[in-house]
Length: 278
Image (tube, rainbow, N blue to C red; front, side, top):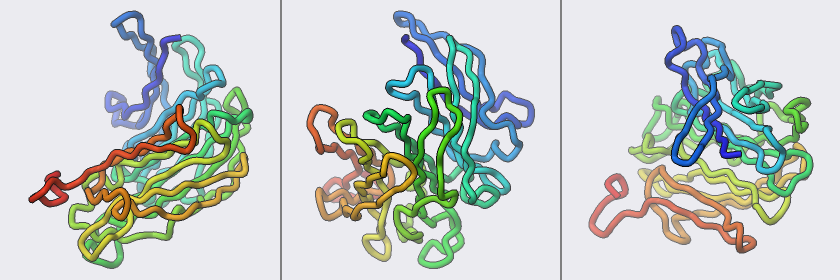
């Protein structure tokens, strides 16, 4: 239908009280037009939030999900909605038991994925606060990495979402980032993707401390039971193979044309340079 959806920080609202809004765009040739924005969360604390994620369902018509994590007394929420033309209806949301903590904030990150081969609108949602480190070289800074996952299903109309475990399943235990460039995208970049060829299998990326002064990307292959249970796979150290040692920014994706093949893009220091200038 040549339509897409955008989630953004609606700074035009009075006092930014609308926080996050979604809007439908329509493409005709090389022309893009937009409908009217709809508030996802109008609470005042939603103005200080992680970058939101938003995803149309790949096969259920007009169904979408939008997630974010807010700070202070804010929420960690995953919203569902439907689209008709350029009109948007927000239908339901799931809220983490960690809401009301500093697990969100603008330095945090979220990611979401629909299972392409599911018939129950199965999904997985990741949230990571980027909270204060209590030990290590970055003590007192927002350098604690503690990503969590929840999985569930939702109706075709975006109602009746089924999610258990409000605190989420740890991808790994909390990690005080050692890298002195801890703000180089470590919170903002996450890959979370269901396998397009196999049901209930997904990948998610994170980080580990390679040394007392360096942190590098890691990869987990995980599974669900098609509902709310998640099994975390082994951690793959990408500094060991294929040798990514850059900081922060990275992306990982399945190859839909070849089963079980993934493509990883990350930073790698050029000869004679350090990781912070690659």
